[in-house]
Image (cartoon, rainbow, N blue to C red; front, side, top):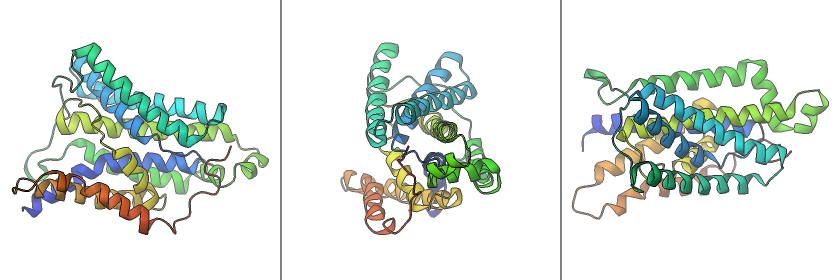
Length: 287
């Protein structure tokens, strides 16, 4: 068991969780339940591969992934804000819809329902930074930027006020609906980028249901991090470590299924014992 390998893998595994959890914070702080993270990430992963496949450019692919996440976020916002659909039902329903759409699209585009062809991926660094890509540093910069926006700007204050009490925010003349839309759209952009990282950094192809529940784990990470970007980063590192650790345990003669479930077991334990005393925004789910 190589400690250095586990550490490098921990960072790689934590990046998509960090991005998605940070996006979730914007959504939840705006008062919108962000159970749609899985669908946002999956659509971002698929669109990123499509963009890279048809243009040969990983940059175009990442841009397509972000756009796809934003579009799913917009749809969740329309359902939640305009039509006042139950936000849990909207989120889970969109997750199921995106799973079906991406599977069908693979069949139509490539004649394969399991995976796409190999595409141009995000380049990795060599030497001491071996195993990491430029996306690692972009993610860290985005976490710092999210902290600054949320804590030090007028927009962040208004967003948090909207999530705590939409009635009070509306009384003060704040554009509550626009703020809610902005929160879910920012969330979509972060999750789309997380999905693009999964498909263009890890495998350079799209695999059916490749998010494998990471959107739900990111939702828990956001709560575990107390709806704070830095807390989300630290929480993602914890979950990333267990993901990397279970990979290092495979290949020792035992069934790999025993280790694959480790990150999900950790998620259940966190939900059961660690997040029950964390206060969510008072206006979460209210319109």
